Image (cartoon, rainbow, N blue to C red):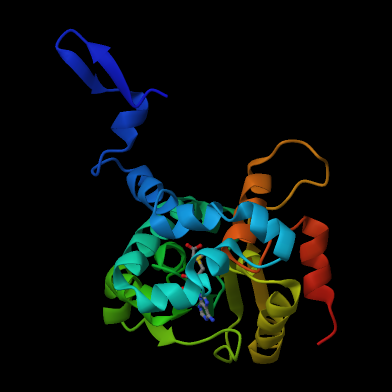
Length: 248
Ligand SMILES: C[S@@+](CC[C@H](N)C(=O)[O-])C[C@H]1O[C@@H](n2cnc3c(N)ncnc32)[C@H](O)[C@@H]1O
């Protein structure tokens, strides 16, 4: 797989191995450690039972849901936050596909370590940000967003989007959040946004969209991953539309 290659003195890092170095900017090391963690691997061992019973692999392996488990285990939570931050590097380009420059208050729900909100606030100098998270992720976000918090442009809020979301934002971001939840739960999150947002507000959904065809596609693997890890699923664009159009 190119992790190591032979050299005259023995072995050295190959092209893939180089990317797994702690100092490589891709963050692949953190992603690899997360996907190879006990939390993930033991849940995947229960894939057949998850398919038979409809319970998640995490529940079958660990007897709880993934986010409760992270709240109870600081070590797993730190590894999860690092992996999510590495996987969130693509969001730095989000301001080039959506214009945030007119935004007043951007609320990032389940904003993880703050990669996305930092990119938005760097880009839209007139906007302020609100990041809503569970306690384990807030620590990483506090670090990543420190400059914006110190400048009075960003609030970090401990919250539960299944119960309520902060009011008055004009852009609500759900990045890799809805795919963690069943239609009923995702519907609740969307409803809370609808109730809380400014009249001209918007909800931005950032997800790996499933193809309408049966072509092989990375999001299909993540669909199975969601089944193993959460009550959620990846969805087609039409399924997201149906979720957003559902009556309040
Ligand atoms: C898959 S991660 C995505 C993080 C970030 N948006 C990103 O794309 O990197 C989902 C996030 O939702 C957060 N979360 C889970 N349940 C939550 C809840 N009830 N209220 C707020 N955040 C929650 C988790 O802590 C986690 O950081």
